[in-house]
Length: 88
Image (spheres, one colour):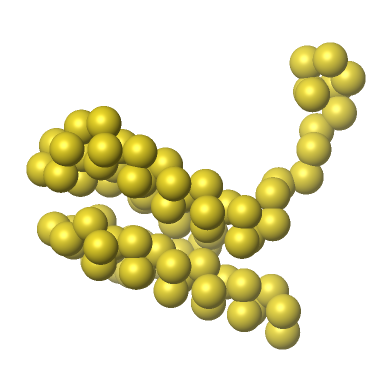
């Protein structure tokens, strides 16, 4: 869109961002497997959470998880907190 019109679109809403982040995470794990995928996904997850405004210590806790299901739960929780803050 931007290249055709020069217009920047607004960021997707937080629910759409959450779904994209979790989908991207799952796709990385599917492509690279559990061990390697967890390591590769860390840089992406860190950037997503940084943009969400998650504190460094909290991000570190998510990034150190060795269980992919726990990472998805934490991502969901962090986005739920952001959505609740947005609604307040």
